[in-house]
View 1 (cartoon, helix red, strand yellow):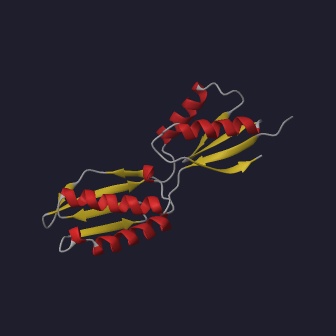
View 2 (cartoon, helix red, strand yellow):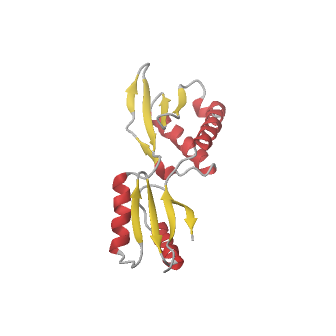
View 3 (cartoon, rainbow, N blue to C red):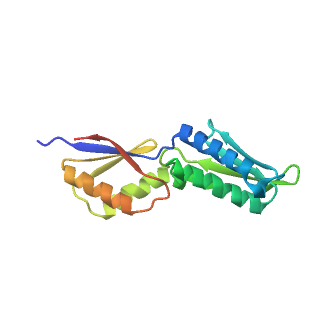
Length: 167
């Protein structure tokens, strides 16, 4: 009997890299001419995986978001895992925007991935939801590589990372 090979699909964000990217973004904001004399702040709550941008107006919020996004991409942080909230008025005639960091794969997305694999009629491939990650198993390593290829081509709204390969 053949042994089953497997791998895990996760979607994690390295919080230390996020913190480093935000520190770089703060330095850039302090040096930029269009932010001289303007209120601009980038706050990060690591426990709740939440970013908060504060600026004078919506134009500056968008500029701040572009800076943050650029720094995150340079640090290899998956920007797909960020969910921007609406810009809302805050105290002191400023505008505030909350951005949520998605850690792990949401249950709905996990179900989408499992349904997608079943619709592809990949025989001998089994997908199991395990909390905020998925385990894909099959007796054939080639089938697992095919699953990885197919999932990389599809967009599920979060960055899928493949790891913990057991063959």
